[in-house]
Image 1 (cartoon, rainbow, N blue to C red):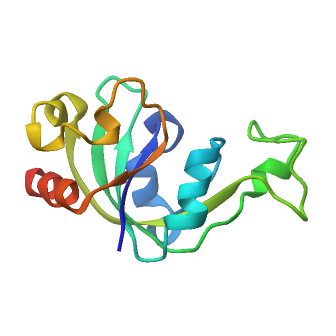
Image 2 (cartoon, rainbow, N blue to C red):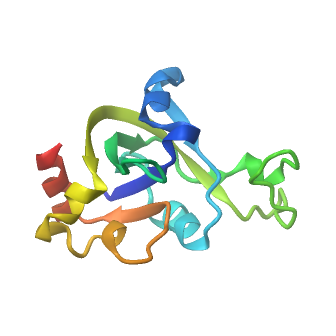
Length: 151
């Protein structure tokens, strides 16, 4: 099993939205970064767990836990000219972008970015690296256990 941190802007889709979603499951679509796409395609697997992280908001932080419920598959939004995620270079026979489905495991207290930065145990976590803007990043087993002990 692998662990992940998946960022979402709560004004677009937050943990409460996931909680209200049918079967508390949603498609994690709109990824337009090749490294993140490759994580989803090559490393993510059904049953992996993820921190659901609220980003680009007043108090960013971990808001819950989610489980990956499908292998990566083509993101339909890349083919939709009405979507902000439309990619005119993507072709149905050779899609460029992928998504996975995630299911809520549990909503947690908000563990803020400010609090996460206080722990030396998390010093090498990609989330805390200067300039990191990836929407999905791997989390080590040690980081996963430590953060869960704080939730």
